[in-house]
Image 1: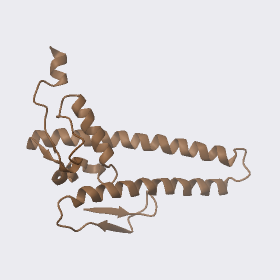
Image 2: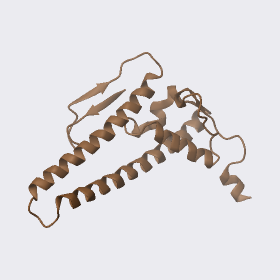
Image 3: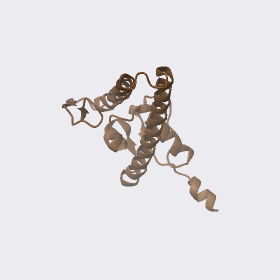
Image 4: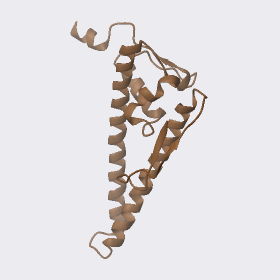
Length: 167
């Protein structure tokens, strides 16, 4: 499991931060920490780009504090859109994996559950996806204990919301 390390979003990776371990739950923890670091990196790059823009356009009609608040609002909107996309991707992955396997042990299936969102999404996104699927009666609800990584995602045994609506 690895995380590409770049200077800017569009830049080629300088190197890959790679996890080597035999501990089966380590990837789950690694992904969560990498996701948090990626969020901080996106915020750093936003602030850097804003600073460069303010330097470039100093003396313009738009005050710096107004430009900063616009940038922050755009960043919040972008992060919210990303998070929604990640939750949708995780939901699709869970549904597909359940059809293939029947149940998912979170700790050992985490790379497949996250799919293309790996190191971007984290536990809170998995929780949202799981809770939404549970509300849709696709999977059984998660519990608060044990830890999420120690749980198994199982399909809902009764009629799904879709089936009960069609009656």
